[in-house]
Image (tube, rainbow over all chains, first blue to last red; front, side, top):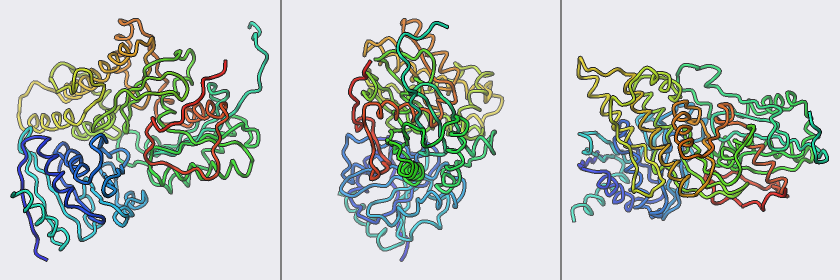
Length: 161
Length: 356
């Protein structure tokens, strides 16, 4: 399928969270969100929004999984928050058993997803983050699998309203 | 030496096992305070003392190490498995695959040798690690556990009686050290290289943001600081002839972390009206943090306690301490006990007050 791509500018953490929240509302079990962007570009912040959109309690604190590698949250669907930041090799990823999360009942959001793009399932939706200045971020959502395109269309309609 | 006034009780030897993250560790601790042996197998320390990201997180690494590490802990302590009074093992929080290795081995030892077993919360281990040192504080006290994965402040009222007063809302303090070390091109883990570099830098050179949240909040946030350092370094690298050394950046960053940690810890201490402050976890090895907390505690006439570095980082001894107190209170884990990737401290069953 032809790639679909849509870009949003956010001017604060709150706006990044809100965009994540809208995306979260459109997600269902099996969806995989691949986050790509440098340190401090808003990946964990965006995930806080995703969690809200997935119905995770607002009282739940979404913390960085850089050290723990995987954090799990219960919502409308289970959210698996993966982070491969401190992994050295693909074999580390596989031996830590992280691949299994793509096939569990839940939504996966993975930080530093460009490390080993080949491990990601083809139905992934990629979210790229670019730092424009201290608070401004350019966030690009893209995908070419029909499921990813479906999510993006859904999101565009909602954000247009 | 003066004879002890109370009749000698039988020494209780507990084997503590921790495989919650990168390290495979085991220790034998007597009576919840005397370390007979403590063995930590860490690939980072063995092969990459100055850098290189090779975290030993693979379950298969734990599988390879668990038997020799436990054997060494027992032989060094000169204790046989059948003579143990209990086996304490971390059941969470942590990586499921990693935790399972320690728990499964503990279960098999407990079953085969008919030794009581107890599952321990890793965070409780860190809080109680101070009891591995001489002259531990009296209850109640306020404890900061700060590492690569955690940054939390607790009101510690007794064994098993903890109230979390605050925690990080995004990155852990140790994670900020690791990430800034990477930005500055230093090794992993980042704590030690930043601390060393910071010694020759000016801590007031750059004013990095301190996140205090609301006035009364005891929560932390280090994500914004990490981003600020990242943006600063990018600009700094483009500019030439800037009167700022990389050591100044390390020192200014470290100061920003330490200032927030110390201020919140002191606020927590005053709020709870306690007389002792404890810091534990990997970041508690940081000398500048210790110096600052010590100075502030002295000013407020509070006692200040911290475990030696070997008991700050992940270790089996602290798990044995927590297990000792739970076993003493009659708690036992059955063979059906499972690991818990998430295990907030408020989910811990409280222990009945310690008999004196």
